[in-house]
Image 1 (tube, rainbow, N blue to C red):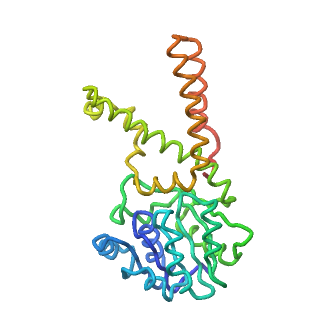
Image 2: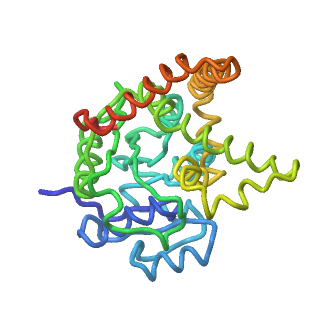
Image 3: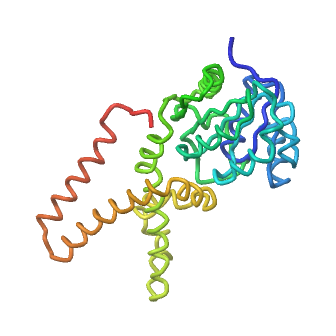
Length: 297
């Protein structure tokens, strides 16, 4: 029998939380989906688009009677949330999340669980630049990777229920150690976001020198748009991701700085052969992304 919950509370009914709510309701995986959030307008929209059945302002009210609670707020809020209402959860309840950082966050979340309540870390790698439940879709996770990050403390039955839930979204599942997750995502997701944000800020500073580069980008900046698409993502969310995965992010920024420095020195020296070697290496690695078997990350 497929997984089924009597009541699911989604804390943070945005793009990810709202899309999950749509699937839970439309596939009959939950009898009742309760939304909790800061914006009344967004919560009303969530009801209208079918992401939740009802909403409450106080998370403590939302988790009351729930057998599954999904944390879909910025990761820096997890500890505050759990401190406020975890003690209200009944034994057997599962708490899970959709955060882009795991590692220490999973360990602290597990430690905050009262007796008989289980935490299961999850990271669906899906999204858009647009935020809010209005951008949600019951197809958002289809074919996307979802990483589950169990530990030695994870309850096997709770893990299986969360696994079945994400399978119902048609995600491609992978299980990974929480700290390994942060290393890998730090390299392939967090560092590219750092680069995109930094590049936009660097180009914005050209306006101070009366060079209107960004003003012309809409007409001739296809490469810029492609390279910086992810810089339109939520600053609040990415601020917290960078903070919670700071050691890995800083390490990979330093690697990136070394690669930039190498290319800078070759350009500065006019070393055509050296530049071509570096660019060919990058081109070959990029082409491998299109030809190698799909890796579930």
